[in-house]
Amino acid sequence: MASQTPFPIRLKQARKAKSFSQKELGMRIGLDINTASSRMNHYETGRHLPDYDLAKKLSEELDVPVAFFYCDSDEMAQLLISFHKLSTEQRKKVFEFISTQKDVEY
Image 1: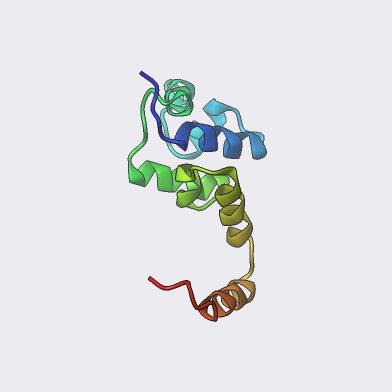
Image 2 (image 1 turned 45 degrees about the horizontal axis):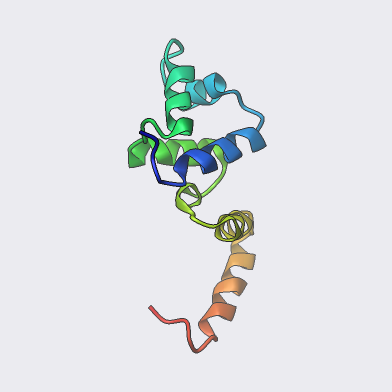
């Protein structure tokens, strides 16, 4: 049974954006050469989901935040990618702006 999580879709998007094959990505994150392609295929089809540590390795290799893999909406996924690519100074400015908004409090 396929998973209902957005993880498979987001993983495939990020992998294709980097032009990695499933096998190449699997090997880059330390999977065995003989099973790398198969395991990545299982993650992209939702047959299996990686644990957090493996998701973290994938995010680092694909240069996306881990949260990207779990975004339900394309808009939020794009927002995370855009924020991730900002410099430290730019991120600081975004936080300063957000902190001035009255209805944003957690």
